[in-house]
Length: 281
Length: 176
Image (tube, rainbow over all chains, first blue to last red; front, side):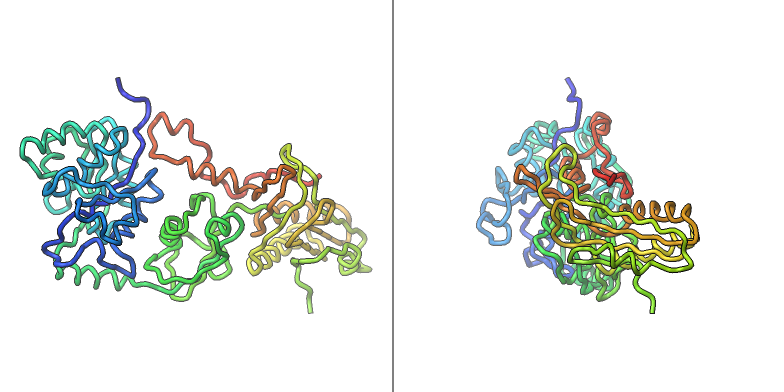
């Protein structure tokens, strides 16, 4: 009997790897002043009901991870599929939007496209890699019905989540943006990614909040350094960080004291104001 | 030097003084509108309210509206004054005045100005209710809709309320 609506969606950031090739904990790497782990959680925040960080048992006390709700691998040494398995067992009624923590080029647009195309009647929805056309498991939705097939896959001694997706009833999408799913595993790749993202650059910006947003943010204004290129990207970042409850569709934006466009490119020193629905007169 | 067309005030508006500024011997007609703080809204008893403004943009957009009114209706002298801060029941929240050669365009311009001010100027109103709670007018149901948002399926899209909230939608209360 099929359910009339999609199962609730939870988020999982995979941060249980050993980062062997990076020689540093990948989850803690920073781009534009923010740690990978934090950025992944911010991308998830407005798209799922709750987010968790996938860890190995020995990472439970690691300070950056310990601040978050954790899901611990059921068995050691399984790699990413172990993290996915543990989540499916932790919340068997939920679907999981799984993100690796080493995707610095991942965008809100790529995530939203995945979620719009998600087919909950299939076992999973994932992108094809733009390199080889094979499924990319590290930015994908796994439905609750995956739990048993994945348990069986692991029990049979198999580990590769990519091969599991290829062999299963998964909906595979053409990538929306080629670079979004590029993952960064070595110091050389990190240096190169930093260089690319740095020209995207951080800017010092001032933000003003009004009315209900001001109350939700807990402040009337703030100054920050952000890599957000547009007011829309800035709002997504602040929405997660400040727990703002209004969707951008409900707001207008002002840049430097004049009504603005959500997709205008921001400049150093800009003031961006987010305006809830007005009620004057 | 010309007075600003749209002004914000954190103390009580003085209609007599505002009216005097628009008195001109060439004008044969004058129309004014006052919005008063009412003691109820959407079935709830209101004790008091607060207005908050994004001042620089409110002044700019307000001036634009008043200039539009002058051009569209051919009226000579216009002004809109809006309160900010804490208001009590019966206080004047907004004052609009128009003077012109003839009365027809005065009525039309006045109506246009108050309607546009209510839709476009970045000013927000928080009502405090007898029950003890309070709410930002036009904001609360947007916040509820955003929190209820989940990934769409066909079944769920039917139950989704208007998340794409039209900014210029009609307000939850209007003056008489």
